[in-house]
Length: 116
Image 1 (cartoon, rainbow, N blue to C red):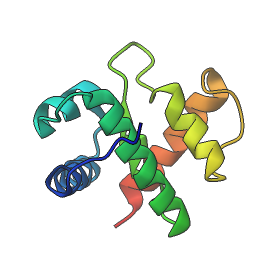
Image 2 (cartoon, rainbow, N blue to C red; image 1 turned 45 degrees about the vertical axis):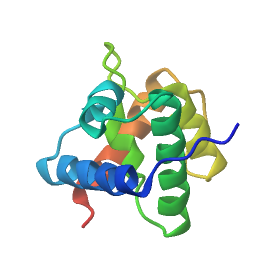
Image 3 (cartoon, rainbow, N blue to C red; image 1 turned 180 degrees about the vertical axis):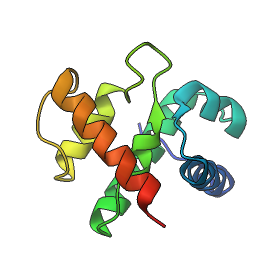
């Protein structure tokens, strides 16, 4: 099954991430789903869109804007699929949890905040 996001939702997602970057804050998957009013299957649609964005950012040599989206749990890290995607695009190498993942994620978030 192929998951697709509408053009309207795609542009709204990019705007939300740009605003988060400008304000230097992270957003949760849940808050993005709610603000974008994504239809079911909302989480699958959002994660597919974020993985596509990561591929585009990596291809263009940009920091991964999808790093700004995190789980609302105590870790405040992205879901494991983010780290798997970051590995596929050649940006991260390691387990999707633990200190190495947290350190790499913090570094990538800083890169996003410092980008224009």
